[in-house]
Image (cartoon, rainbow over all chains, first blue to last red; front, side):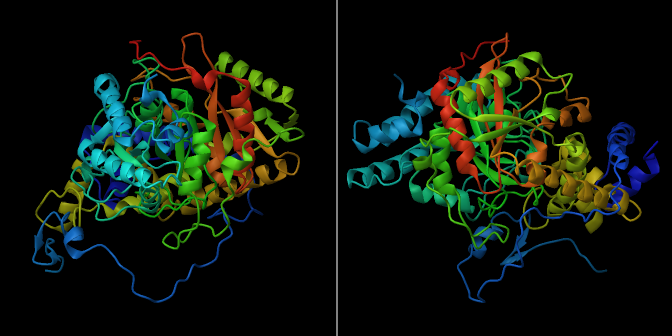
Length: 95
Length: 488
């Protein structure tokens, strides 16, 4: 096995996801099968290869520090699951 | 001749001469949608009223003699991944079930400035994760050529809508084949431009180093026309590249004589549908008659592309989708504390495939596994890119099948994620290397399902692949066939 039920539980916690026990079982099997397939990559010796994060040679993109129009507070807050006046209302973060 | 069945360039002539109005054309398209949408489910949202208003505006511009943009007054459909101001944008996910964007993304803004009429938002795999459009939280789109088949994915709603004349053209996105594979499955033209060619600003992100926006159209000329409007540098997307956009349509007619086309032996493999292989090889022969020179080439790391892709794309997705936490927008399920609220909201909001990919990506990035999976995948990605660099020393373009089979049956691969991933085997490397890839129809199998041919170009050389595609289209009739919307 490439991945255990315990690891699936731990990764779910990291990803802020949760699964019913039966789902977790199926998911473990599926992820295991996918990770077995990924093993293919170990056939290749990549010691001397530089990792590629980005295909286009671009450098940091800077812009002038100038105010530009952006969506109205009303437009942005219209999608808020909960709001109070001009604020997003969220559950208490610090006890 | 029904107006809805025509192309952008045909309709533009009629609109410019004022033989027809955009209002009439838009009405014709909506009548077609009314007659077919029950069978196909191509759309998540239709917006007839705003479309009629846009058509009226376009007609006013046309009346003033403003016929400059070939897209003025043309009804198009947008994949539901594009932010559209004031119009529901779900990404086919319950987590964005009520999301009304406060602004237009850059490609949409450019299309609107050109004067298009938006008919609606098309169905897709949730967050563009899938190859069949079955992962939509709302409905499965049917293939217009055979209703028991998938339209491909993730831009399956767009592909079905274009094939069935429910819109004149559409805009899709492609992270591992999501424009080209559905285009092949539905018998239309689809282009994934070079990474950095079209702005990704205002497109819901899946895998940011791979995502690109591109046209899905009835023929190559329409594809070139759409590109002229959507392509180009955008300061709002720091990965968009500041290079000039060529006049694609002007270049289409130039001769392809003497162009060198590479045929990679790794793309003709045991297990692929023999009819697909034959159609693509016949297509290459037809192009040889038009003067291209064919050379066998090798892309030796092709077999590793799926493994690389499903590590990199899921890693990027796990990070991109962390934003759906139910705080500023999207679905929220209040629970006993903040962490519980995150978990419940995400559990209810995301579908099975999206969760699976977030899990895989989180795992690949997590402590203890990062080097073995994510870093390893980035290294092999470098080898795949190098394969293409070597190949392009010997040729100007590469031709392959777009997909190993024609459209598969609905439900056939939903239980086996890995089998579904293998549908993208011929399209994925192009995203990993950031190259442009065009899919166009090159035949039909014995069941009447379309077959797609893929033409891959050098970085920022969409022109050459469009020219080859155009020459092929002039020599063949495949793109003129229309689906009958018959049951399986």
